[in-house]
Structure formats: C-alpha cells, structure tokens
Image (tube, rainbow, N blue to C red; front, side, top):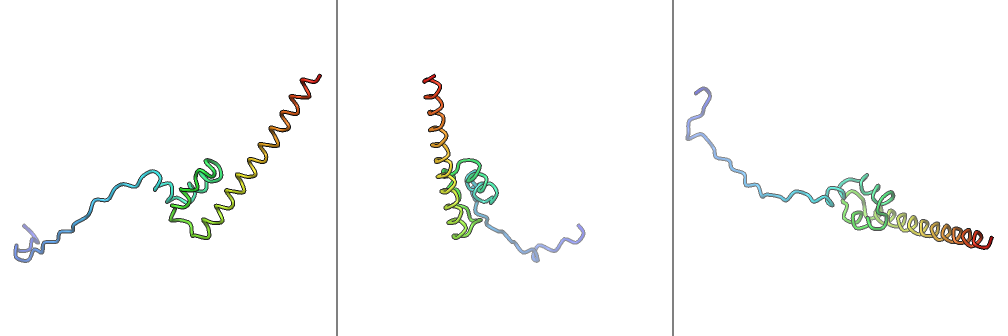
Length: 98
C-alpha cells in the first residue's frame, strides 16, 4: 500500500455533528428579502407581517418602515374599495330609478 502511514501514526479525528432540522417553508421565505417584499406588497399584505418580523434580512428600522408602508397600502386599498362600492351602489340606484 503506497503512502499509508503506519497504524501508530494515524490520528483518529471524529467530529460529532448534531443533526439539524431542515428549515421550514416559512423560515425559507423569511430568509429571502424578495419573497418577503412580494408577500407584503403583492400577496398577503398585512397577513405577511409576521414573516417580515421573523426575517433576519431586514434591520429593525427597515422592518418598521415596511410595516408603516404595508399599513398605508392596506388603508388605501380599503378606502378605494369603499369609494368603488359607493359609486357602484349609486349606479344601481340610478338604473333602478329609470
């Protein structure tokens, strides 16, 4: 056997590795900055805030600013929805009156 050291020179090196659990889908999403932003602004809106707060990719200030932006976006969507429903109901009343 070429280049095999004698048995007394063999140093036994055993590394104990603790098994780690695979990251959950929520942890994988929270680890991606783009996925968190997509969830916040194009997907779930305020329902994605827990993912934002668990994300290690954003600073505390960044999380606070994004929180405020999501709240503002949600309020804007609700106001637009109320205005649209009011307009729509007005159109229905107009058509019924004819």
